[in-house]
Length: 495
Image: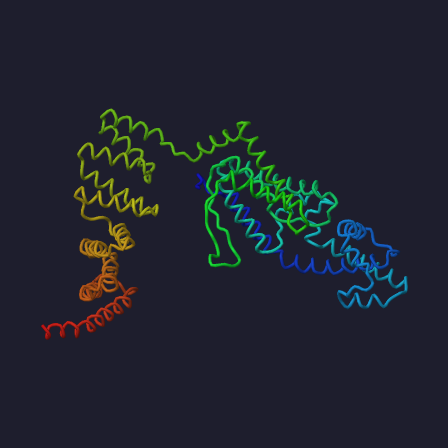
């Protein structure tokens, strides 16, 4: 698929997500590790000594674990369970209620301090305690590199197409709204959950839902990876109307199963929101209005003077058209449209010298725009019209076109023509060096290479900056000739 404009918003979202993760993941890992250790200790104390008072901040967490993870809670209550660390082993030796309460108070203070400074606690979404800011911020947090890169890959696949279809502001709004709706759907599915939710997958799922509505027949290239076997993977195509609904059904089925640490219901909620948003944008007419506005921005329309000149050409008034175009080019010297039309005017008027001049100018413009193939076609037209010499800087750059095509004979020929036509210019030195290099390295013509290098060395044009390159080339050409000489002599005596 392709887009009419650069997907600036999609690229910016990818960059922001990657930068945020790269800047925070070490701090998040350290904070979460320390906070989880304190949480485990609080849970163990609360489970084994239910009479202890728990700080209000930690109480909600303990209650959530007790109700949502009953098996784990029962294991913590078991006095014969294996100690998880040295602290656990030490605390089992304490029976004094005052000392145990002091330990709980200390843990509660640590818990409050760590949660206040924790990036995850402040910006991740928690269904049991949804803070308004986390509907946005949780979308830009990720668990690890695989998490962020996987999400960004799918963001790119669906995002750049939708950004082109909807326009940048509307696309960004739907993306952020899908992320927020994914969080809310997760909260509806698990209203008391204390598990933190992070990642752009809900927002990306929204884009996938919108993609299904907008491009249901699009074929998507798939690769299925196998862990073992003779064939480690297989590749196949699937239409969007098969693939994406199947993915949603898998997410629903996974969401109804045991917890696995993935926000399946957030994915479902984001997907449904994105699909409904796409339907609403289409049937409200907003999508069509945005599409028309983008087309007006990206579509090229000629200036009035060029339209007028074209009308003059169509009416056969070639001289008037040429005057109008030359006046326009005085103000817009780099206009491709004006030069193209002027060249056509000169051709129809059989003004071949002027046609060649306009063609040479177009060749220069195409080279400056890095459109080398178009420039080479201009050069062929220039030659066919009897043209011989171009300005040396333009000609030198043109010579590189056949070289890049690996048409080395033609490239050498052009380099040598340039060197002869502009022998007093610096470009002649560079052309001889380039031609010699091709003769030596590509065409196995060391004699011609030596001739060209020596010609460059003998030039009266100042060339100190490339003098060392020339001398190295001369030596390499002589070495190549000396290696081939015995072979040639042997062949002669045998004959």
